[in-house]
Structure formats: C-alpha cells, structure tokens
Image 1 (tube, rainbow, N blue to C red):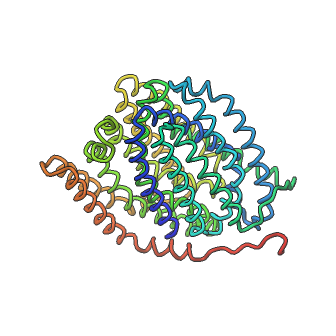
Image 2: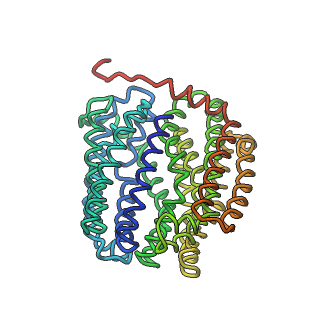
Image 3: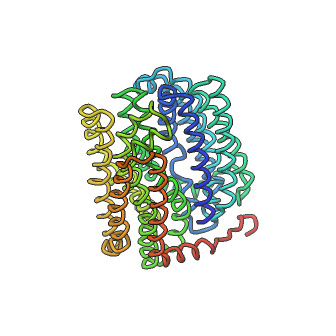
Length: 474
C-alpha cells in the first residue's frame, strides 16, 4: 500500500501543479470544452471492457488461464463502444451546450481503445500487488501527458492541448503495461471461460454505468442546463473536492479488492479488515474535507485566480459528497468481492431516481451552488444509508464502524471551526491557509495513531504478495 500511496501522492501533486498552470493559461471556456470531452470519455470507460477485468483480481485459480479471454473481450467491446461514441460525439457536444467540443471529444474517445487493450495487464498488476511497477507506469503517463499539454497550451492549442496530452500519455503507458504484465500478453478465447466471465462482468459493467451517472449526473446537468463555462467552474470545484479521495481512497482501492479477495474464505477477518479500512480512511479524509469546505473562497482565489472564484460556491458542498463517496466506493469493492454486484447495481439505480430530479431542481433554482448542494444531499441522505443497510445485511456490525469513525467525525467539527476562524482573521490568506493545512496534517497524524492496529494489518497483507505461475509453467 505504501507504493500505491506514494504513486497517488506524486501523481496528484504533479497534476495539481500542472492543472493550476493550465487553468490560468486556458481559462474557463477552454476548460469547459475539455470537460465536455472528459465526461464523454469517462462515460464509455465505465463499461467499455464489460467488467471482465476485475474477474482477474477475484479469480481463485491461475489468472493466466483467463487473461487471453479477458483481453479479447476487452478489445472487441472497447472497439465497438469507441466507434459508437466517435459518431455520437456531435450530438453529445450539442446537448452539453458546446458543439465546438466535437473534435476534442472524438480525439479523446480514442483512449477507450487503449484502455481496453491493456485492461488485463493492469488487472494482473493489481492482483499481484505490483504497486511499485504501477507507480512507474502512472508517473510516465502523468508527466508525458502533462508536458505535451502545457507545451501545446502555451502555443495556443486550447482544449485540444489537453486531449492530445492525455492520449499521448495513455499510449505510452499502455506499452509499459504490456511489457510489465506478469503473464505474456496475447489474445485468445476459451469458450468454457467466456460465459462465466460475462456472467460476472456484465452485471458489474451495468452497475458501473449507473455508478458513472450517479457520479457524473451533476456534470451532465451543469453542461446541459448551465453551459460549458459553468461546467468548467463545477469541474474545478469537483476536482478540488476529490483531493482527499484521490490521495487516500484510490491507493487503498487499488489494493483493497485483492486484499478482500485473499480474506474471502475467512468472513470474520474480512469484516474486520473492512472496518479498519473505513476507520483509516475516515481519519485521513475528514480533516481535509472540512478544511476544504471552510477555506473554499480564499483557496480558489489564491490558487487559480479571481476568474475562478465562482467555483468556491460549489466546492463547499461537493466536499460533503466526496467524503460520502470515499466510504461507499470502498463498500462497493467489498460487495463485489462477495459476489453481490447485482445488489450494488440496485443501490446505485435507486439513488439515481432521487438524484436526477434533485440536480435539475437545484440547478434551475440556485445555479452552481444549488447543483452542488443537491449532489451532497443525495450522497449523504440516500446513497450512504443504503450502503450502510446492505453492509449490515452481510454481517458487518455498524456499531464497530461507528467505533472506528466517531472520533474523526468529532475532530472534523473542531477543524471546521478553527479553519473558519482563521479565514475570518485579517492575516494574509496564504498564511491562514498554511496554518490551517499544518493543523490538518497534525490532526490526521494523531487520528492515525488511533488506527495503528489497522495499519499494521494492512501492511502485513500487502507484504504477502501472491505469486502466480503461467499456465505454460503448470
């Protein structure tokens, strides 16, 4: 997990700095155009390989036996979905309020082909806990793409600079995934494995589509009702609010499925592992989330400039949704490992019924802030209770989760009050933000001391990497 955390930390710090530069160079209009294209890409990536790559992580036997079939399914399905999205790009761009985004969408959507081609190698690295290798690949992707994007942006390429950079980085990373794969890369089709893989993956892919709409219905609403420029403000706020999740949740999500899979034959230890991970994530994310909420205006103003200040209205609400998302995405992984992908689908679908009307109402009545508030309300008032209810049905004691989280939640209230007081003082915004940030780091470190048993358990599981032999060796 240490390499995974370091990988994410370096990636996020790098992209954060590059993002500031690009935001100041391009402005809201060009950022809005790229945001339209990125939403289209993420929509297709939510289901392009039909969910079969996760089967490699969960497979109880030799993953080399299914890897060629997984690769074949991923390549074929990704090609079909990429072609469909390419031709639908003009209609999508128009619906999102920015017809000029069409060529950017069409270029960026080619990333779907790359993603599908390396879905199996990426899953194999995840299964074998090769986070050091993954870090090298991810860093190459980030820095190559960022360098190209910055150079083209300074030359006046606008939103296309971001698309070209992202595509170039993905292409180089794909080659590295294939070279680093623990199993030789090849296509193949084992008919005896095809149906079980699709039976596992298709419900998961359907769930992922619903998860995408739950996570991005707000951006779709922002673009279609409020326009691409407002979408740019919203995306900036969303990205800032996602920082705690990106820094702490994503590294754990890379190793959690494999960790849960190793413990699935010991239900008691599996449930205990989940509660410890929840406690660790809460200790890490809650202080950062409340700090972002309380310091939204000076933070955006100082980092991105006055032109981006409207994004602060959304940031104060979106951090609430981000905190909830940290929890229920972890539970999502847990339920999938238990083979309950169908249950996850219905939870997400049920929340979508509430989310869409809430977003439309919020955007229509209160604009950017109303849209963000609606997202936070549904995340905390609908999705979170549904996942807690389902966890209880699997035998997880909610009182144990509460015992791991009550202190971080209580401390979070104090961090919010202290940050609000700092922002209200007459000291320089930079000094106030630095003081608040230092406070958050100290508080989070103290909370993690309360979770040291859980951290030790994760380290022990992470060290015991599973070794796999190829089918040829067997």
